Image 1 (spheres, rainbow, N blue to C red):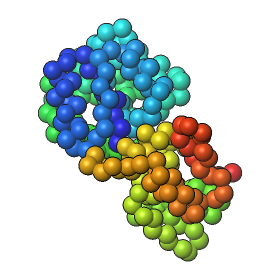
Image 2: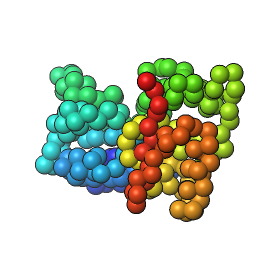
Image 3: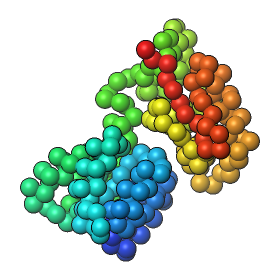
Length: 223
């Protein structure tokens, strides 16, 4: 899971970032809203964790801009603003959760895990349609075609789940390296191509498009 963390308190930012990385999340840390906005355009994230009172562009305004631009990435505010009007403003700006400082890191992790479940469930649907006859069973992590149940190899499964979270968008090679390989593993371009080639065998023709020099685009064939 790729997380963009916006926190201008350097000490707290380092503590949160290190804790999340220890729990197997990939974290990009920024200290002002403008930098966060710029990175949100450049990279794909699965979650935003945003402080509110930060330099240049405040957290509420930042998320409002993201939502207006069609960015539906889940977001959690972490802030010392604890007045009910601030909480209301936070949720109205598009947040999925709102945590008041100080908080326990364990609680933050629990809230992230909960968002993970909700996000990938795609409004609690048990299946995601990929093409006219092919579905992905979220709970059992299987491809379903008619009565056939297809189990994917681990790396191909990770790639497919990432593509399903980012349909019709360019997914970079780096996105897939972070998603498919653990921190102690070493991925390579040849290995990535081999796994994508194998994944294509299970899907419709041209569903995974090559984006030369950048990565891939996954296009579901749903009418």
